[in-house]
Image (cartoon, rainbow, N blue to C red; front, side, top):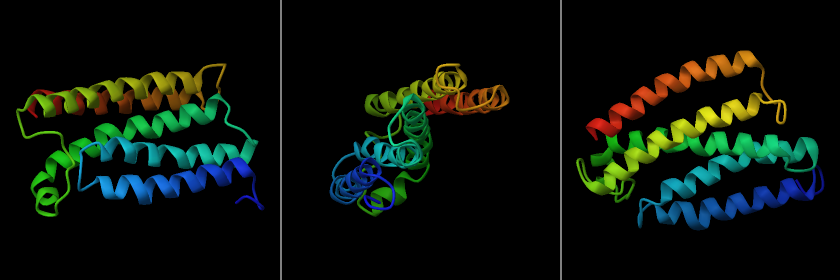
Length: 159
């Protein structure tokens, strides 16, 4: 990547490999914070694409990274909840607490916040300052975010 693309893309890629292999993967058996670290790992590839295409990290790169980061929180926390017995049997600490616990309640609230962040980031992506998506994308994403928000609300209420 350093030679064929640019040093920034190579640096992001190298940092992501280290973050994935040396922090995220071992953290899965130690702490539920692995989900947050994993969300960073997932947010870096679109930023790498931006760096490869533009040679920098303009606002659109940060919006795309933010979208991927925020999407992963409700997605993976709900999956971890649904498969908590499997994760527990495998020795993975994917959730901060059991059903009904204050710690899990904070995690479900994080799901709700990140769905709201998704909508804000979609609006930012469509704004004239970032302009990386069309108004049609914003309309479609808003409908999907509403459905995602409803599911996150149910998880928060029932989790």
